[in-house]
Amino acid sequence: MDQQEWTRVVEAATRAPSIHNTQPWLFRVDGDRLEVWTDPARALPTLDPSGRQRVLSCGVAVEFAVVALTAAGYATEVDVLPDAADPDLLATVAVPGRHEPDEEDRVLGQAIAARHTERAPFLPRAVPDELLDRLQATAGAFRVWLRPVSGSEEEVATVFLISRAEEIERGEPEYLAELERWMRTDPAAVDGIPVEAVPGEDPATRPSNWLVRDFVVGSRPADRPHGHDPDPDAPPPVVERPAVVLLGTDADDRSAWLTAGRALGRVLLEATAAGLAASPLTQALDWPATRAQLRSRLSLAGHPQMLLRLGYPVGDRTPSTNRRPVGDVLGFAH
Image (cartoon, rainbow, N blue to C red; front, side, top):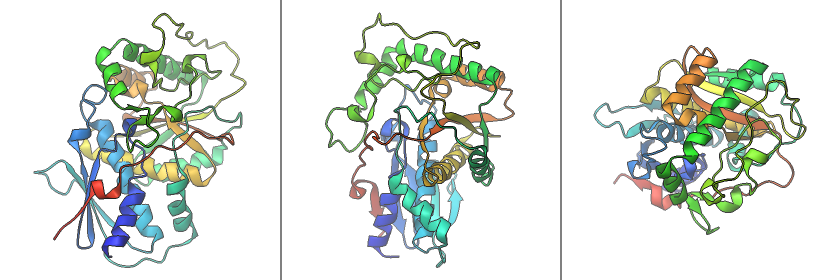
């Protein structure tokens, strides 16, 4: 592969979603091998002190690179954490030869450009069980489990913990300051969360039982109503009832986080190809206490890594976020 081909692959990889659109990755090409590094300079020390979500974000980028290579007709071999002495080198993606892409390979490759996080309400249309089963099998191929949050008890417990985590975040000045640092008012900004990509209304007032992250919480009145506690006897919202799925792993280390990210990347592309949009509901996973409570309340055998909201988007979608130029994140060995 030449430099132009690798540049296209890395351009696709950088379309991966990342926590607060920090894009915490760097890439280096050495012959027929792509190295994927995490960039500690783009860490979120308050929200993500362990680096779990940063590594997970890079795992999505790894899988987007694999999908792009496969769609372009190249075979791939992924080696996770190849250098025990340097944990910031998260993965290498080797290209041992050619591969004949099939229709599914091409569809997933096209889904990379089509996918973007959708925080606006979804259509009141249920996600078919067969599609959720397919996404479950997709994650399972990475030894990552995916389970829908279903049943009133599970749903109420999860909604409560998301709401509780939002309350914690509203009371943390360091969190609010860190969030503010990654908000962008310039539409041309190449990283961070652009304000135009965030719904303007208070998420607590949205007619949905699933509370999306409030990215402009720091600019809202402190005495505003914070919504209400979930009522298990309340009727379902009339506007939105998305499918909510939890992805998790048996272990909870750097390798597990990276693999969960790869599975998430493949799930997002499969969902996009099927006409779905997604957004994370990670508040309850941000804080160790609520993450542990979620594991307990849902009787999880493993460790939750991502809570994802899935549904059919409305026609007028929020804009996608920008990415840093490939030249800023890609280097070539001499």
